[in-house]
Structure formats: structure tokens, C-alpha cells
Image: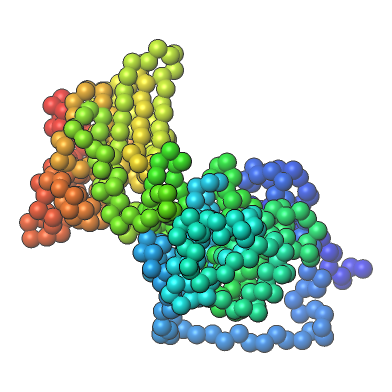
Amino acid sequence: MRGMAKSVTAFTCTACGAAHKKWAGRCDACNAWNTIVEEGPLSQGPGRGLGAAKGRAVPLSGLTTSEPPPPRCLSGMEEFDRVLGGGLVPGSALLVGGDPGIGKSTLLLQAAAAFSRRDLQAIYFSGEEASAQVRMRAQRLGLADAPMRLGAETNLRDILTTLDAERPDVAVIDSIQTLWSDTVEAAPGSVAQVRAAAHELVTFAKRRGVAVILVGHVTKEGQIAGPRVVEHMVDTVLYFEGERGHQFRILRSVKNRFGPSGEIGVFEMTGAGLSEVANPSALFLSERGQPIAGSAVFAGIEGTRPVLTEVQALVAPSTLASPRRTVVGLDSGRVSTILAVLEARCGIPFAGLDVFLNVAGGMKVAEPAADLAIAGALLSAREDSPLPPDAVLFGEISLSGALRPVAQAENRLKEAQKLGFSQAILPDASKVEGPDKNGSGMALRRITDLTAFVGEVFGAG
């Protein structure tokens, strides 16, 4: 009949949300494989069916409505509470991702024990290990006396029934990929199961006021496995980063509805579990010895915390037709751009030279303010001339070779002075408050462009 709307089945990509007219193995929008699922259409349009009954009016409010900030539950682990934005919010949902074996289960077991020791009821559900295995780890970590409770289950219905009966303050689910719902005809770990389990747990957290922490596996690219809609459902997404060869671990907030995103917490992996690092700058610079060529100290900002790290460079003659460019802990595209600017604007070629760059301690730096430290380390290694050992560097390099100022210069300088650095090399336009336009009492060497930096620091123009 002409008056009836035609029911059309939609196909949607669970990774990016793009709509498709028919099913395909790969999404044309994001190039992800096996992410397109069929979604049924609405049976009736607005105003049709149910006797055209009206819905209830939604109460509206203005922006001037004053509401108290959400309450916070502190764990006592200062680094963990910092990343959460000042503590755990009741009724919130968190997603923690990280590489296999990096220490996610250890971190959350310690966090659950810390919450339980502060008179909060905590339940830890493990879908990957038996309760006996979790108890053995707890004894090794010295958590056997913590008043938390354990459960080993993968059935979503049983987990929700238990949580509804116990009504804990904190519930840890390790992991979301192991759960299965009997209402979804798919294998555990599939897109449909992960999405359904996450939806039920997040809904339960909001309805009952229970803070739910979900553990998520990551793919080879470092992204949390499963549909991206899971990251949209939860309130906070945390990534647990680190290299297995290093003892340092970084807990980074990439999304937080109750606090600043980009905040980091630093931990050190020891035989007794993860210990907090109150001063990460001192830890990352603890191995620095005598000044050598190819080393530069970068004063960076991670979230709201200033962190000093060491950028190391090695430049050596290459025997290959295409010289190697090996970068660890930095953006390789950014490094290639800096090499091109050094050659085009300063006349310093790196052709025929292998370039190796590394951030000491396993730290990952994505801030554009590290450009000047990268350039300083590269030039120091190429000229075999050490930078001043008491100097820190920060500044963004433009394609024209000019140095651009970066934010929070004063906080960077104060952190550097706290660790014994007496001078800083920074862009000329950097704004530093204080009566002496210095703010920290350090000697400031202001540089206008990369050519002036080469001439002043390395004595060549």
C-alpha cells in the first residue's frame, strides 16, 4: 500500500557507526573487518501505533542550576585516585585496557583490596582465573587480610544477580571479553556478547549506584578489543601502559566524565606488586650519569602533572641504501618532520646516517612540546657534542623552523628547578609569570628559531 512506510533493515559498523545498505566483510569508512552487524528497523514511526499516545514531558533545567559535585570514594592509592580525578564516583563505570601480562589484574586486585580496607564493600569477579589462583596472587602481594570477596564466574546473569543481592560499593569484572549472556546467540568475546555485557553492567551501575570496573583486552594496534561503543558507554577509559623490559607502568586516563583526561599515574612493578611513584621525574632521570652526546632532558606535561624525561639519540653512519629510523616512545612521523626541517631550514643533512631515538624508562611522549628536545638530542648525537647537563628543553618546531611557545611553561620550570636544573632552553615567546619574568629563578635561554638554536647551543649557524 502506498500509505505504509517501507521497513528497511540497516547494517551498522560497530567500530565507527557508519551505516551500510548491505552486509560486507570490511567497513568502507574505517577499514575494519567483521564489524558490520544487522540492526532491525523501528516497527512504527513517531506518532504511530499505541493509539498515537503522547509520551511524558521531560523536565528541563537551566545552566544556572547549582548541584553539589559527585561524592568520591578514595582508595588510598594516590596515583590511582589521581587518574580517576580525585577518587571513584559511586555509580560510575570504568574500562581499563592494557597489553597481556602488563599488570591489569594485579593493579585492580590491589585497588579492590585498598577500597575494602577503607570500609567499602568490594567484590572481584574473575572470568579468566579460578578463585584459588586469585587468592595465591593476593597472598604474594600481601593482601590476604583484605576484607574483599572473590568470585569466579562468566555467566552475566549470575553475576548481575549476585551484585543485586550483595549491593557492593565497588565491583571489578576481569574481563569483559570472557562474559557471556544467554540472551545473545554468539560466542563469548564476540562483538555482540561484549556489547550486550557492557550495556547490562553499565545500566546496573547507574541503577544501583555501584561503581563497576571492567577489564578489557587490547588488539595488536593497542586499542581495546571489541566494539568502540563500549568506550562510549562507560564514564572513564584508562590505559595501563609499559614495556615488559622496564619496571615502570603508566596508568593513563584517555576519557573521564568526572575529571581531567590525559592524567597519568606512575607505578613501579616489584616482587610485591605495583608500588606508587610519587615523583616520576626523579625516577625517570635516576639513571643519568655523566653528560654524554645525544641526551636531552624534556620538561613535559602529562595531564596536570609536570614530568621530566630523558630523550636519547644515536646517529651513526649507515651501510644501507635506505638509512634506518628507529623510534621508541615518540611519534615517528613527528621525528621525520623534525629531520626534514633540520635539513631544509638549517642545512644539516641526515642522509646516509642511521637515526635511533628513545625515551628513557619506557615513557611515551606525544606532546608537540618535545620537538626542541628531540632536535637537541639529534644534533648533540650528530655533532658528538653534549648539551649542558643542567639544562631542560621544551618547545614546538614549526615547518618554517620557528619555535612556538607551549602551555604551562612555568610549571615545567618549577619541576625542573625542584630536581636541580638551573637553566632552560625554550621559545622566545614563552610566557612565564613572575616579577622577574622568570617565575622559577632559573636562567632562561630564549630562542627564536631552529637556526638560532643551532648557532647558540652548538656554535654553528
